[in-house]
Amino acid sequence: MARVTVDDFFCKGCGLCVDVCPVSILELDPDVITAKGYHPAHCVDQDKCTGCCTCATMCPDVAITVER
Image (cartoon, rainbow, N blue to C red):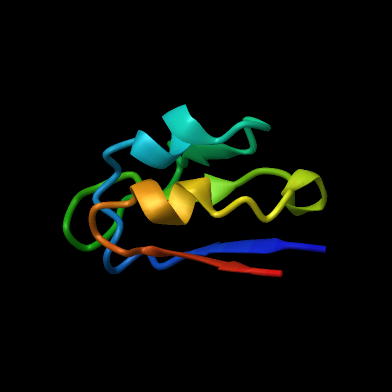
């Protein structure tokens, strides 16, 4: 089972990972604001993650780690 981890320190909430996720399990968290003032991305359903790493590849800030 794959696992997606987003480092809130580096995530600027650009939403590119949300757009490219083929199973639509990433979203920007409206309830969290980082120290830099961004809404970071987070995974809403780890069980549906396929481990494709498209989100990590797309992230311009290298804030996403995918473990298989």
